[in-house]
Amino acid sequence: MIDKSVGSVADAIGDIRDDASVMIGGFGVAGMPRELIEALIDSGVRGLTIINNNAGNGDQGLAALIGAGRVRKIICSFPRQSDSHHFDSRYRAGDIELELVPQGTLAARIEAAGGGLGAIFTPTAYGTLLAEGKEVRDIGGRAYVLEYPIHADFALVKAHKGDRWGTLVYRKTARNFCPIMAMAAKTTIAQVSEIVPLGEIDPEAVITPGIFVRHIVEVREGSAAVSACAGRPQ
Amino acid sequence: MNRLSRDQIAARVARDIPEGAYVNLGIGLPTMVADFIPADREVFFQSENGLLGMGPKPMPGQEDPDLINAGKQPVTLLRGGCYFDHAKSFAMIRGGHIDLCVLGAFQVSIGGDLANWDTGASGSIPAVGGAMDLATGAKQTHVMMELLTKQGQSKLVRSCTYPLTGLACVTRVYTDLAIFEIEPGGVSVTEIVGGVTLDDLRRLTGLPLLPA
Image (cartoon, rainbow over all chains, first blue to last red):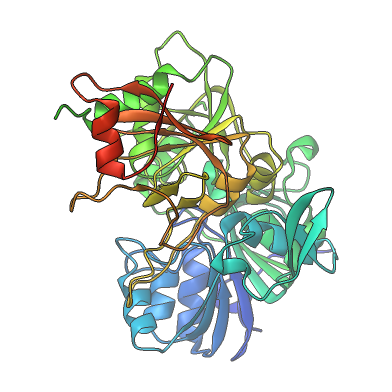
């Protein structure tokens, strides 16, 4: 019997080593797999390359990972925010490398990696600093910038429900980058609020087929706000 | 000199958005535009973090951390709205499916170049988000801003000095003093706040503005 579920977040991230590249789902804290990141901090790994839309908010999750000095490089679209103080101080101290990528290009590069494409041409950023040094091609009279896929050793994502085959559905805007990151990484680890029996997830509603997921771990939602909303009609 | 308040600029932008339009509002000032769409006019607001049919902010106590807009503020979903991932969201944006995006700006040039992500100041940390995709991908990019900086310099300029977000992408600029239309033949002033003259605007911007 195939069972991708593991008993703890520590087991789920146990294969991640120093200098790994790790995609982390989430937009701000929506969809951020906080408990998996906390396990990563506890594991002591260092020198990580992180791919996320942001560079941490507040003091938890990705912000704490950066604050703990475990991140060598971050690839993101929007690092600077009112509550990105951990990143700001590490960046100003020269402790962390930043690759700034427009948000749509970030998504397209991740999707390209997951879909086996060698590169993409995007009109975004043409003529700007973020296209400097990159190949530009005229396609049908419009200028496009060559961008390469972003691969990663691991992806950590948060989903709403999953089953033992690794099938995932998400909740509201917590979906964001999670489905494409799950496709792009060599090993995807999903934290879900509930593991349900096979067949309980409507096949027509599946967002991430289990083929993209290696490990799944249940982390029940502790937040009162989330559990109060879970049963509310959309 | 008379000026529109930020609320009044937002209301003016909202007046031009027709029923049925697919619209993305940039974070910050443009987000206010949604508050001024009349209740009987159906407009589809898209947020690049993965929702179409975005509704107003929730009632106090009803906030859901999994339901936020691009500015990471709690929002609601209208009946009939939907969620999707970032690849699909930016396919909507880059693929020309969004009728209009409204962005804030540090500078807009008379050729429609936009600068709104980085002042290039030393020590600043750049953050671009979805601005470059929106500026380039939406069918129309309109800017909403105050015409002058706090130091009195025009943000409508001959040529942007800040790093660009997109080239020749802005077609209309709503400001606290006037509305500007950016066309191949030059910038025309299509609406002026009462008490302000075309010559006032020419003096403040130093630009050869055309009458409508």
